[in-house]
Amino acid sequence: MDTLSLVLFPFMLLYMGAAFAAQSESEFGSAGNPVKTQGINGAREYIDSLDCENGAIPEYRHESAPETGASGDQLEKYIMRCEADNVKIFTIYLDPNHTKTDTRPVRGFTSWL
Image (cartoon, rainbow, N blue to C red; front, side):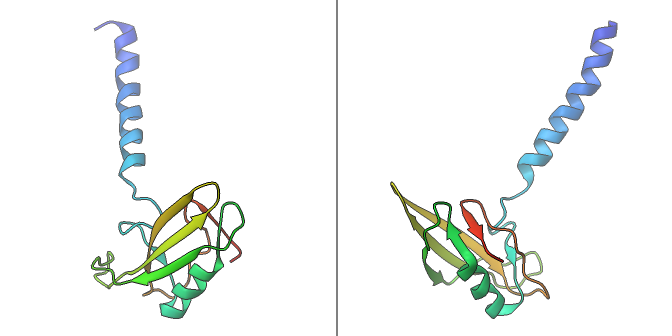
């Protein structure tokens, strides 16, 4: 093996490992990485704090979620609708079994929390 291969091979392994790790994390707000909220009231407060990227207030509805969180608790599922030049539909999962509510917005929204 030449010197270039000895240098590039470990670098390539590190790069591929970092790329795989970045892809394996579920998107914030998905069933695999739900928004953490303080109870059902915290879930509703979080959803009510979201605005569409264009500043419009989204329409939403709550649906039964068959998915469970990492702790085995039932998740809350909201279908969000933003209207701009076109209509965008988002599905957001929340886990209301926590002592604090996340304040960062999910992708596609801004939040005033």
